[in-house]
Length: 135
Length: 179
Image (cartoon, rainbow over all chains, first blue to last red; front, side):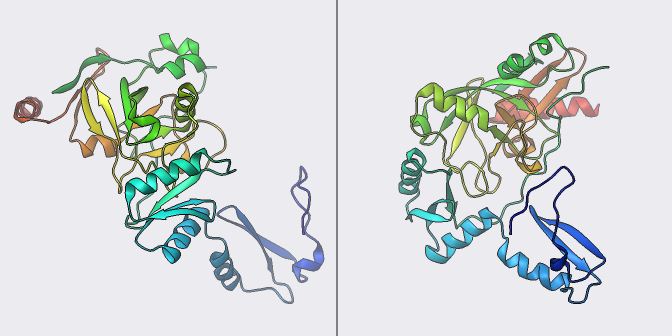
């Protein structure tokens, strides 16, 4: 179901809260979990999260998984979750990327290299984007 | 080859456009270096002018999405972006030219990330500052650069240990610091 977001947040129908007097709200990668606590049929939070984890992998992880499943060992070009090209030749994959990038797709294509090992994501330190103005 | 010799602190051209008063603001001026960037395929490998900020405080190097869009528009390119991978890092090989010295930017394991300046982005995709290219510790350690930052004269020098002569210079500098 869809509900409007108000200045106070959102209203959750009571029938969905299983009689719980309290809820726990968690943010999992942009997906908001509302976990009824103490209700008559309250689900197990850990079980719920396991289920949710399998359905809420982020887009880069899904893209990588799709590429690996269908074209292991190759370079794969995707737009969203749609594979548009694949090749074992790097230069050919780059050319295919160029074609996809100039197409009229709503999303930017990505090029997945399945030979690459997992990388650590950046943790940026350094100066802030905006300096506070002197008062 | 000495990459830079006593280059004064400054601000980037984009910074000056966004906050004109900062050009004369000492604290706003930093380790800004004029460079050229060339891509493996994008825009046919044409050298593209950019302002780079050398940031030892940043773990990773970033390329500004704003700069990418500006380059594509200026070139009238149908192809709006260099090849980017699923994690938002540049997939194409690319090089930066600093004072005539051509150095690769990133590699597959420590890539050059694409970052957004401003707007709502997850922290790992935000690129601080107003420059086009942020050169972090990954770049400094990849090329074994020696930086000399002179706070009194507000100057930056960069030495790349490319050859025996430069390596000897570096060793002399480090010895002097130990004396």
